[in-house]
View 1 (tube, helix red, strand yellow):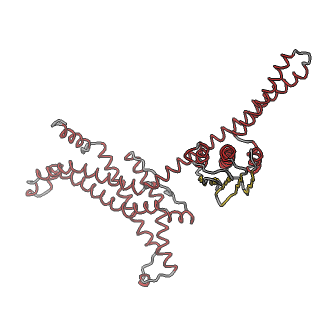
View 2 (view 1 turned 180 degrees about the vertical axis):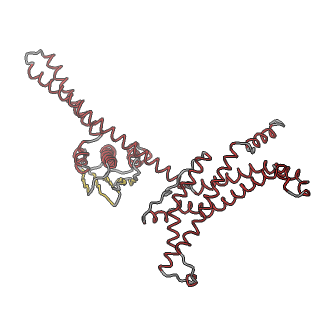
View 3 (view 1 turned 135 degrees about the vertical axis):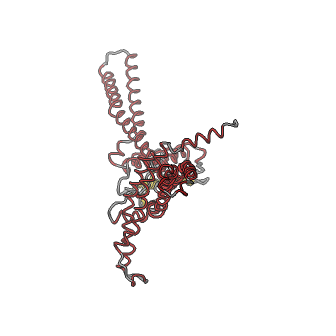
Length: 428
């Protein structure tokens, strides 16, 4: 850094805060509007007491009766909390229109005019922070702003001393130069003082009127959860669309092709052996393609799950499994579509893993609803020793459960049995 860089930067910064800067005048207008607003906030402390409390000596003694408690505590508190919404809106507009700063709105910043809305605000930390800004911090800032405005008037009056000094006695007029110099110095200092008060107001407004760090984090988590749920729902809808297109389009065409080939094989009796062999082979391949497509469609999204629910869909999975499966589904109300789909595929993939790796003779599947959770338990009597970190199948089950904020647990000691427990949220 060169020798002249620092003074140049200081000069630039000073010019930015010079009295003729547009930003300074904007800050002054900001304080001019803020002073009455902040002092009006403070007046709300006294107004409820003037309205609800009658001056009487016996009110000063405890314990208070129920009526006295309602009038002296509950009434003023309710009045203050219900006033917070209007005060919040006024402050948000003041910062946005005059400073161009948009303060994020905290949760419960709007209080509904009802007992439930009032009860919600009483339990809300944000409402108490906002009330603290308007009732405690706001008046202090209002007095500070009033002092700044008075300082500006005093500075301008001193700087222009030669314009009105003639009205004062002669011995005072002799000190006009001192007054003018002091006024000019004060004019140069006041932009910094103004910026300090405005900056303090902005900082406290962001901390008290806006959401706290924990609330911002919770809001971010809610946004991410909502976005994730949207992606899961979109993926599920896309699977349904593909399943429907394959079932209603491609599969029907393959069935028609197989029927045509079967008809050709039956009618072309005079064809040569080579031609009959080609037709037979084409017919078999068409039937195999239909079977594979049915299996693929079932893997995308089984239509029976939409039509008849988990019990019927899982009954089909158990019937197709290569080992005996004891199935019990106890669900009084159908969960959300995405939850139902995840539960179905968890059971299907778990039974597939059992058939491939467990060397089990039997499996047990239990699906029930416990409060706001859909619990899926798959148990087998195989060799055990399943490790989530060493296999993609079990890891895939865990990812499926977590995709909808579910939990996944596995117990698989060496020698068995293996138990997989998945709990999915299904509040409805």
